[in-house]
Image 1 (cartoon, rainbow, N blue to C red):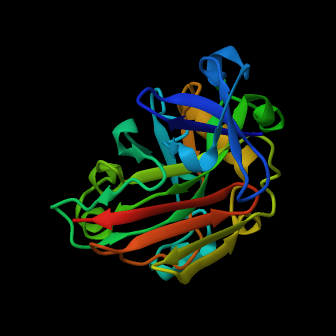
Image 2 (cartoon, rainbow, N blue to C red):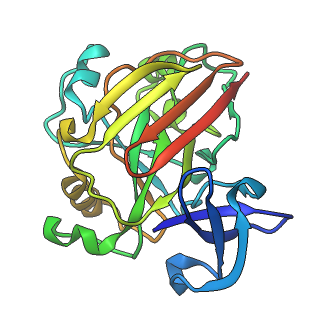
Length: 257
């Protein structure tokens, strides 16, 4: 099931995206599916007639995982960490499909990072790996924009990873997905730059959610970004980065200075 958040006139709403590519419709949901379940109202819109928003604005946090693909760690001259390397992004970093990513004035070296994002569906803490499926609402595409120059000079990554608009997500949440073997690709102005697979992750989804939940109580709508494959690079004013993850869809965002 594909759960989208969108606007037609003014107020945001949730809906279920149905239909084949090019013929999709959005069936409007009553209330918030994270707390009320999926209750379709009977109102429908053509997908082309709505504006998709970030499918969720996390209630509390976005947890990122660094260097979870060995080739990506190597391309930046880093060692593979002995355990998942966590960082936080504020919810003000989150934007939706098509929204502009605004390059911060304090950085001249911002790069793109295509990632699979896990969307938490219920409050949880210290989740055993074998019960992780019980706490996941679904999955979406994410772009972990990073100010590389600031990442090198600051002692921690809050500014480099957490600036406003640094975390586009979308186009919707896919609730039923096998994450063991998914292609993760990214294009800079139409040129393929990243072409990885979740099978290459050092730590898989179950391990990551379990590990993160040992440090933080996870709330409905929280996001866990699972790391990016090799091929990251810098992006500048006027360019666009597009992500595609098998089984989910495409996320595209322009960049502005």
